Image (tube, rainbow, N blue to C red; front, side, top):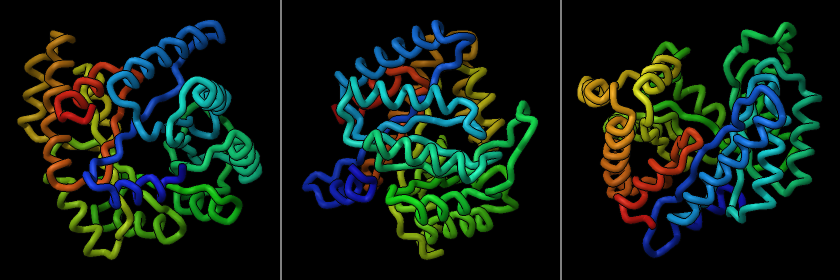
Amino acid sequence: MKLSELYTKNLNSADKKPVISIEIFPPKAVDDNEFSLKKEQLFCELAALNKILKPSLVSITYGAAGSNSEKSDEIIRNMLEKFDYSAIMPHFTCVCSKKRFIEEYLNALKTYGIENILALKGDEPEDIKVCYRDFHYASDLVEFIKSKTDFEIAVAGYPEGHIAANSIEEDIKHLKNKVQKGGSVIFTQFFFENDKFYRYLELLEKNGVKTPVVAGLLPVISYQGFLKMIKLSGIKPSSKVLNLFEKYQDSKEDTIKAGIEQASIQADDLIRNGVSGLHFYTLNKARSTAEVLKNICLC
């Protein structure tokens, strides 16, 4: 199912429940044997989550310059064999990639029946010696995919502004460009204060962006992981959120419980305000997302 159909179907439904989607990533491994083991563990996590509520959409991350494209490809093929999700959406980063490589990979995805792509620039890799400059921005990738395929294209939005942007207004101009070139749904980076998301929606409307916006949620499962992710993304949580996770930094179990509570409160409020979709950054773990879905009665 294509993204536009998935989110239009939701808008036209009687209960107007948000579309639930999740993000997973190919596990890191030193060899094929370890990868196979971790992949099966990942699929066990997905199966556990499916018992609570099968997500309508699953996205799979993709490394810069195709650094883990083979692993992403294997995950996609195996998921198609094991699960019957309404839609699968591979990520696709263009930094350091050649047009020919991207076109070949897109054609391969099409043979699997994939219909959706999340188009991203990606981070500049430190371990790649030759970095091609066929694409400079995500908007270039969106335009290229649109000209070569009939994929439905999702793009990324940043409620607090992209870390490289000088302002939220500048970032929204870039987002509008991505939408005009073919982006049909916006998936946001995770955030911890819903008022930032609502202000973002107001700014998008003010700038004429009427594309469905899916809210990204991160149920925190590790204090150190939380600190790392907010630093890399440039997110600035409130002192209330920072203090919450700092309080439980020495207890993994309490951190997980706090992450579930925080995400549940956010999700409930977002649903009450008519959000199009909830996109959970699962970190390849089912428990927290499953508990959030139970707490907000979506299972």
